[in-house]
Length: 260
Image (cartoon, rainbow, N blue to C red; front, side, top):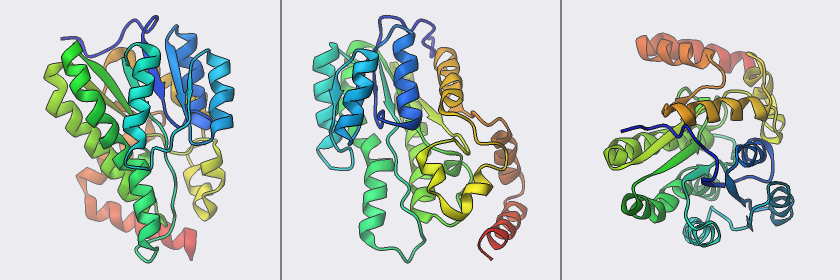
């Protein structure tokens, strides 16, 4: 059974968080490939702007609510006549550590993790019935490694990668495939708002959203699970697994150098 989507033309896609950054670039690229794209963003004006650009519907719902992801799936499915690819790209940063309030943790987990769970809850039964579908999770290198100084983001992105793995294992033999996108520094508003860690995230060169999308599309065609727009992240990931204690010592040194 082929896991890749060699031909994207005439297929349908939803891109969340598509008003800006990686999501905008992804919506534009998928439309250029001939896909019909539904554009989601909590920023209604930004969603409408990108939707006009790609010629698809704008669906401005908040994915950080219990009902938002299901509503998005329902409306996009009706507008497009089905969904072949769902790009769960929306994400927020949060910031801080264990000391931040439950409201921050809850909001970050709702957007960065539970939005995927809730969307999949609506999508997977439909995909199994129609023979398949592809779920793209925009996670982060923080989901394979860790982002110092930002516990909610790191924890939520680790969980997002784990959920994508679970989806692929649980339903992969029934036509439902998943893809986890784990970039490091990307030239977006989120990077520029990351404070002291901006320089660290840009150490191996912050890349443009379009470069991330190029790798996403390549791996979507090939049916690869793990998309690493920064190839060096694979080496970091291997080093972390090979000697976790040494990895943690290095991360503690980075933390000290970054935050003093």
